[in-house]
Length: 290
Image 1 (cartoon, one colour):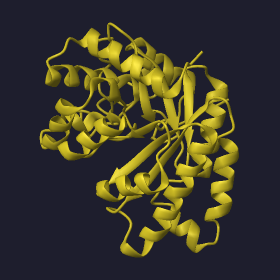
Image 2 (spheres, one colour):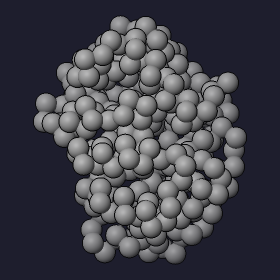
Image 3 (cartoon, one colour):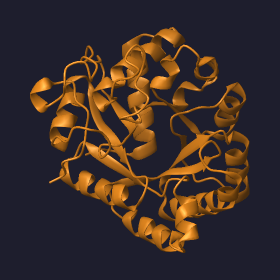
């Protein structure tokens, strides 16, 4: 039984008053949370309750994402525990240098490869490059790990979920050098208009989180306006990146509708039409939840 730490809006499940945003108005067409971490957070509740809260808001399911061996094993347990969950497994780029220094990176990558054989693991991620938290001495190990993850995704025919922080040009260059998998997702899209044009040209998906609602996120709104609608996804990255006006509170899959409605407003689209597009795009990336 998976019992992860999941923030929820309901006090009867142990959420303290003021800690979480209220449940949003349900979406008219269901969507999916394309990237979340059910095993992170402060309040342990049954996985099914977290998904019930999301489903009540019009979020039909979620992609649970691993960042290390422990969370990747949790991901496999979660996809077995509830049919509303699909999974992604990987070693986070910020963890690669320490593993390499300990002589444990290759063994960890081999275990990720083995976990990826599960039929409900549909992506390798989150992997990529992060030049914000990792110093220059760790970049080579990050790049090596990223290349190995690209290889796993290609061999297994899985999508690649990319973590890209302050490394846009290097991520694009690495994908070009290695040959990108058929399906690439820039999780928690953080690029500018130039990266959006690159994604459009290559058919790479852009997954927008609550950051698109932040007042200082002009680059994200410019990118959203340019993005091919067929390449749009939505996610929470919960428990992080809670959308405006609830910044400072814990995020969770039930909050996806706040971001969807903000995206619809920014794009001048009706909510139902955008939700239908996001639903179709999600299935194009990950396949069926059934």
